[in-house]
Image (cartoon, rainbow, N blue to C red; front, side, top):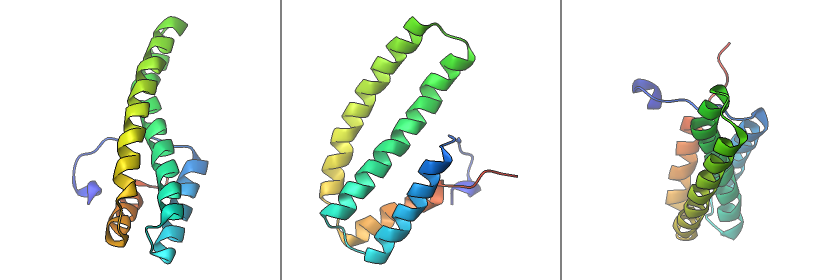
Length: 117
């Protein structure tokens, strides 16, 4: 669905891509939105969010060769955004049912892509 629309791209480390796909497969096979599934999904979403925030907010500053003070201020702001996101994500995931878990797993699969050759 995303490829049918204009979209933005954020690269992630290969390790995170591999873990995301493995986690999706594992949780889909289990099919239960239990505490273990919620914890694994929470950690994955936080790591993906962190990678995205770094790319969209810090990478432009690195490319502009911003000073350490500017990067430090940006990191503090991003840390606050991530902290707020963690609280919201945790509250949402605690209320997951099996159907909602499947929908989130579909979404994660949809946004993870291999690098183009």
